[in-house]
Length: 176
Image 1: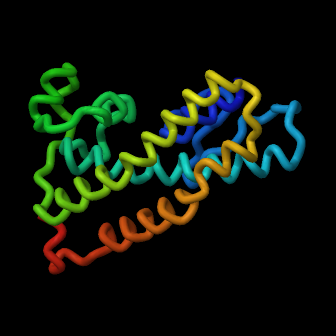
Image 2: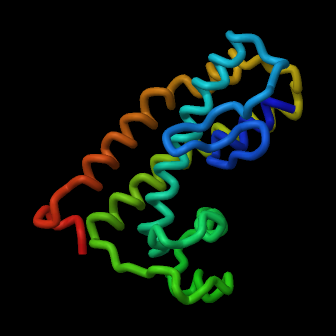
């Protein structure tokens, strides 16, 4: 079911139907079953999933101390864990010891915690839509997109804020 796969993409999980690119999520090549209006709805929804994935990657890196050298699957495994130190998470998952563990500044930790809290309603909405799809499998893409209308402004704004924070010079006190 395409809509269910779309729910997974909204949480940053791509696969055979929706694929990840460096700057976006998109439909896999060769899907002939969709007309152009359906593709437009899907791409608009996929943008939210891509932005969510960017925010989630930052949160995971900051809260669990995983550097960019960690494998994506390592980050995915930790993305739902809350309140666990990076060292315990790395040991508990049996990850390689060459994973970069850094100590972020208190400002970055607070910012990551704030993002985590801000994204909870988004995750709850994805869950609601997934449950709605189980009850009503023929839910239209337009109705699905409408369910995330409020996030079409919020997620880009959060990503812009993240870009500002990440671009801050070292003397701003955001970097250790």
